[in-house]
Length: 129
Ligand code: HEC
Image (cartoon, rainbow, N blue to C red; front, top):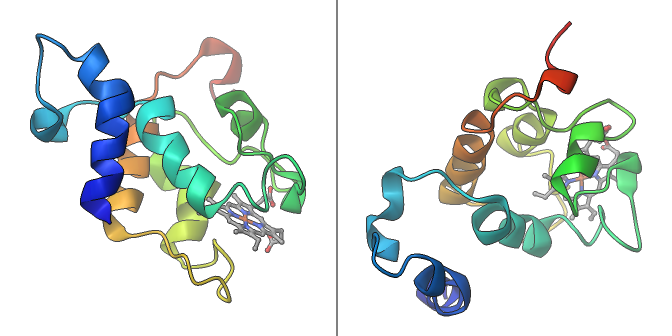
């Protein structure tokens, strides 16, 4: 399943973009990309409740900007700081997806999301005051 998933994305995106550079398998130390790496995880495990039809907690996770705005508790993501990002915290403490959900976020996926947020540049407009 995991293999198929990767192959699918590889076929669609990575291979066309990375022609001439690294192979998908060598990408362990490259920075995760929102559309290519993070969004597919969110799509599969979060968007059902945080997307078009539902915005639980008033949080829309379909785009980076809407996650930066966040929901009732404020921004879901703190660029450059996964540790302080609500989105990561809730996954880490197994609160999201809600416990009754069977689709859990795997360790690898959580690591990828952390890396993605840690690598995110901090735009001046949302720097801590
Ligand atoms: C079955 C529906 C469901 C799924 C799937 C789900 N959530 Fe949620 N989420 C909720 C509900 C309901 C709330 C609001 C109540 C709460 O905070 O417990 C919420 C709240 C949140 C909040 C806090 C929003 C705020 O500002 O208070 C974050 C962050 C969050 N979810 C992240 C995620 C992530 C990341 C995923 C996927 C890994 C996910 N959720 C999947 C139902 C869901």
